[in-house]
Length: 383
Image (tube, rainbow, N blue to C red; front, side, top):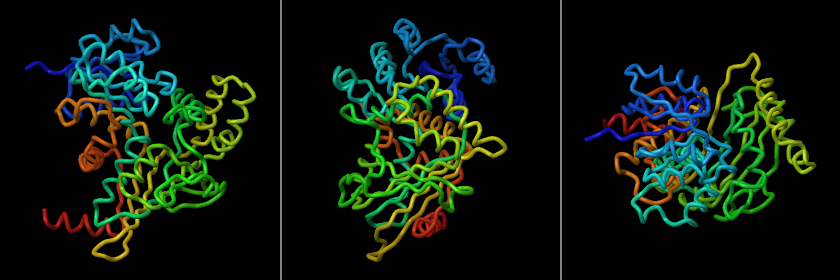
């Protein structure tokens, strides 16, 4: 049986290059590497000890280039953006070529475009969206945590953020998320909102510009932010309360984020603002070690008594986390573990498989507390 052809679009970018390494770790070789710069793609291909990877110049914004890249692929892993500008362009090209698709982002806008065009399940094809760190891992980890020592979950508090470089794609998507990225043409999420009584409630929480949190180094700013993914997570886990905070350890990035909506509304050039975001991230990172943290505290019941389970993930890079989830989604689709149709990664990937991979391959350090720590010790003892 011939090996499946896996196309990685954006293979020379921060996420794409890491995704190629993750795919090789999972045993996938002979990859088709796509991107706009031939020399950068060649550098990625040279990392393949067997030398079986091929490089193809491809621009996600050029339909002809996308068609040429996706033709002959069995599955395409999309690692390029800006996500909310491309929407379902890459996934649609993959489907037209008879291939499956995994997108490390995509989110609700891509899902809506795909379903409006016709359910890919009718042709036996699979599309997995939001297969990254946030969204993606941000929902997979709480689902995994809920199964560690708790009989039932009632409330979740999450803190996610870090200190790292900002890619052009991330910079542009951050700005686009202020007005798009959510379902039905809405913004990606709502600041200050939270889940109460199982439903979104506006302006419940407050921003803290200078505070501390044990999972983060030094003083940080925290902003409450409720996304569509988080709301769906609350429904899946049956949560009564959910408080989600984006954490900003760097003062330069935080200062720019405070004025960003106003600058965009005043008509300032988005490309120039993206350059300022990239520079601000570099200023915050100067002389400091990059890191990314996801911290979750889940309360509920264990043996009919109130209990709390905690999980803190610490990684050197959110880009590698995104790459790992994307590669695992590709692997799951090729193994036939994901049904045909359009899915979000958190709904179809096995959380235990994801956590095991992150631990086994050094992508992240995971620390458990409370009921979760006790449950894992028992499991290890049984094994």
